[in-house]
Image (tube, rainbow over all chains, first blue to last red; front, top):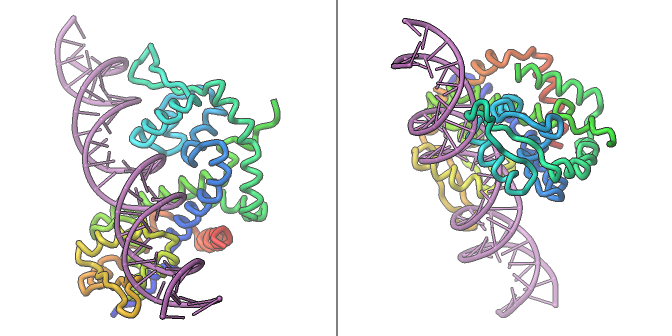
Length: 140
Length: 140
DNA sequence: ATTAAATCAATTGTACACAACTAATTCAAA
DNA sequence: TTTGAATTAGTTGTGTACAATTGATTTAAT
């Protein structure tokens, strides 16, 4: 019987990361429910509120998501009237996603969310900075 | 036009957390493929390698997962012959999950995984400790 | 110009997550 | 002891994630 302490759940770094990520998504849910978005839809809208127009390819690179996730998600956002999808005429392989007026309107209602989440996560500024720095290292 | 900087993707703490969690799971995949487990199945096995026997309810509390996730996952592990599920005779509402000999055997092959992951994540000991501490705060 | 390689979104299939609900059983108060 | 509340796992439905494949189009080398 070798030493298997390294396999204890409490020693893993992956597990608190996985659990905390889901926990934070759960904390968002009540706020996102009010504006009718899921968490993943929300981060897509964050990008579109910044960019207005972006190719699916670049959107995927920003969010580390592939077409298998993005295509159905963007179709849903399109059905809600928040985004528009159209092909680039110069290169029809490329799908251009842009935010609609209705989508831009939602930004006003989303403005309070980061502050609310910050309040209920209750991390010190120092910890928040550290956390972001370390996660940045993992993301390379 | 109010100040909407707070909605920039780069300012969110949730996004690097979400992205890093998926990134770490991706890093596990090649190692877990070798022993035929998914990441979620792996953390279930981590608990069972420690406990040998545990109720579904307590397993769910340890991993923050509910029956909607655990029931089908445990059925898969049972079909692989790694765990056994049986009702508590004193209280048949309770499902007891225990590791089989085959499941215990897998532990030997899993022993190298944490070290390999640690190597490729390449976090300093200091950062790893900090990260775990801050994530612990989020998990309450 | 032809064609082979590369690019890109969409599709398919598997596996979570999780909310909401169901059904069986146990517990506890009257 | 009856019955209403609580507990527990299972089921159903929605929405991601992501690997692998497909098919259309563009680019680049000949």
